[in-house]
Length: 255
Length: 161
Image 1 (cartoon, helix red, strand yellow):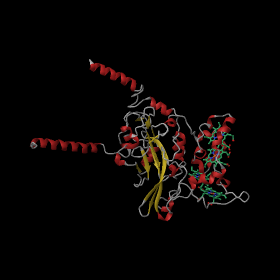
Image 2: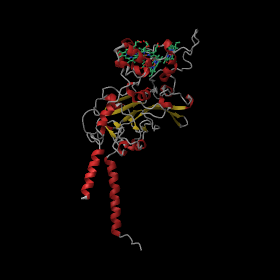
Image 3: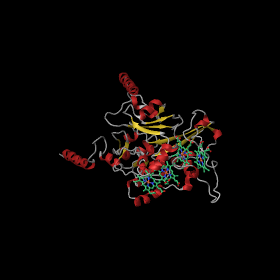
Image 4: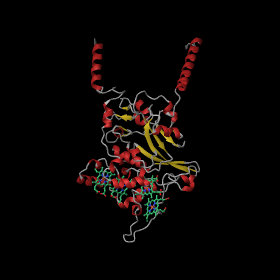
């Protein structure tokens, strides 16, 4: 025979349940997602802490970022391996949204929808967001992916076991498995160029300065004034990834 | 007793498996930072080209293409800039030569008419970042002698358009 639940134990159960739920809500309130990290909890330390600003109004979709990224970093040439790429979003007058990215934009874009059907159209350059609460770093079982002191998310190819957890975990689709080395591959913010005092390839080869990078710790940096003077958004703020890539003029259709 | 052996074994295996520089900066192998930083360069910088190609650099800085990087059009020149010996350089410059008859496609990457390039069309943002032409229409002319399509650089200097 089943013993009926004793009243007091049910009460404690409900109570603890309530406390738990309250705790969850409270901890949510304690850490609201700070889309703009400036007000948020910057890690302690000195030196630069890098972020990115992309101005969609200035992007002309030339794909030089995608091309120089591939050549600088020996990214496999097949049209589905990218560390940096450009998408064209077209919102038609009937509300339909089409997204194209032929070879990541490297060979140029052909307009696919006739002018008279277009409500608006724009280019969205994409790359690793170098999140400071990266889901990809959190899921790595062997500590082979990590955040450098400069806030750059890197992979240690010698210790990566190629399990693909991080590829799945990245909500922005910025990782892939390198077909030659069988390890996770992603944007390194051209760490090798940064450390030599050079701009990463995609920034250096942008003809319109649609993309900039800078030190988020330095309140007078170009990037901080970019964020201050534009209506900036990060991608998927609801996921609270702590993305450090700020888009100006980002339409909500962009995923 | 067995307990002590198991612990000792665990410490031994751990010592062998955990890389030397692990935890130096954080929960990762510290050396991975240096390895990432040491990767070879492919692209140089436009400022570097000025050293030997002053004339072109000067032309470009005063024209509409001032904001463009040399390698954005010419491709990676990291090796090319390293050699001052001219025999070396000529060989290494081969990959940087842009073919004359490819410019109609090449310039179009930035200048082909596209709804996303002419934001003025939709009277929300009253400006355009780049002037566009229709490659199929803009001076789509054939040379009288060779009967070949006129290239963009026949009329526009790519370094000062």
